[in-house]
Image (cartoon, rainbow, N blue to C red; front, side):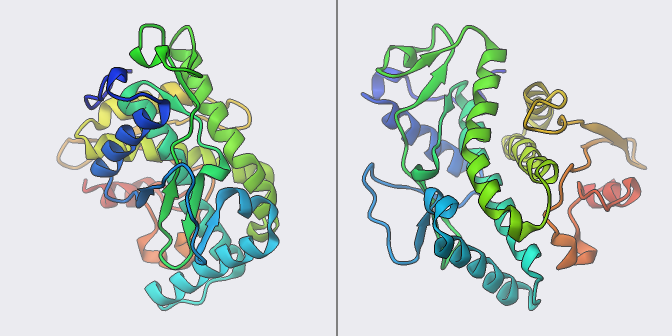
Length: 284
């Protein structure tokens, strides 16, 4: 995997947090759908904020998080969602955004940050995320970041991919345990949703950079098949349009249940969407 954007050298930042601030700014600048702000190391949460850690152990915080998603669906779509639909949508947004904070830095810089639940906050009023860049980073030998205190150096690309899978799994596991009863799906479906969002975040970033083929290759290397706790691989395939163009696509392992809100607008990777409909949505 090669870096898709130039990143500042480690010498330009005295800490891992400083490096990550630069990487997150690059990421947000490229990904218009990623609504994230950078927080100071000791953020002052407002009354409308909840942290990722609070969602895993504070019942009232989790209830407020899900109620806020319910309210946004009602306002945005003029639709009253089932409780499990609001929970699924909230989980999907969280998994995609937080996953991309880790996978996006990996794709852009070849470094893996470990974002912990306490490093993330969600503004309940807007749904926007905030992140406090932490001190934990993994990189390859020869990376200037390896000289910074606390940085883990791993021997090769696959070891770095393993660090990314572990970082995402460690972050998401407590939230899945807390939100599972609301989503009303078992562990395999929940981890399938997380795997889908991990893959789709990298895929989206590649499209935004004009490097879709490279991003598909990177996502496939990250999840070539089932790697516990993720129940399946990226599993991309290509569809040929009437104009002869080839379009990458895949079928999601989990489902964010958007189709229950706007059936005619289900995403192209929805497991309930046939290949002909996927091709139409992809422009073939």
